[in-house]
Length: 239
View 1 (cartoon, rainbow, N blue to C red):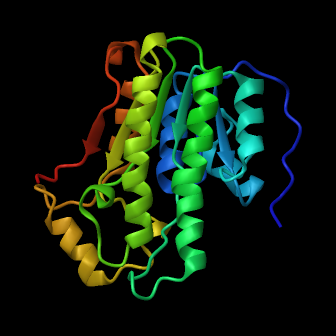
View 2 (cartoon, rainbow, N blue to C red):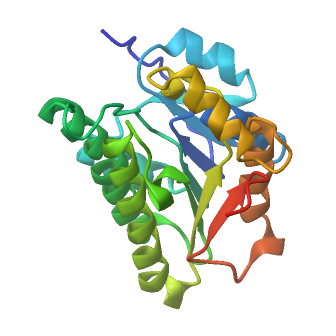
């Protein structure tokens, strides 16, 4: 069972990072903590989340699939920015993928994103920012990643719809597609596939979590005002 969150003193939160205990989410939360008061959410283990994020971040337990929990979090904290990093692999060929794995992946990547965007449109202040981590797999598909690809492709469309709907209040909704960053989400992929992805990078290097974190930080910066509904790629891959 997940650890119960410890009570925390109420603090004004600049940014909430949902899915901050993963490789990418953790890098983003740590980067934002250098400039903002950040609340990072985790799902499984409070101790490991605090160890990963460090003392500069508040932490709070959240299941991104929980509609009411997301609504309550944003209505209570009223952040200026929201960064959405939660993800599951959903690895499996179309012909062999179980219904359970399919629904689990979509419940995180689509249902969870929808709950978060709906709450963001209600509770973020004017000129608030939302950044979601997409994937190149959502743009091109991927063998053995059907559920993941479907969720990421649908998520890009949801982000663009939210950008249109939030435009009158100058709310910005942008997607960042990280490079092929080594993480637990890659565990279902073969060594040959991993090598192939690395070779598609013009520099022949794996993706860097810190590069993704810097891009997200820039999108939350006033210098990025006027940028919304866009998909940015944090790698050296040329299509």
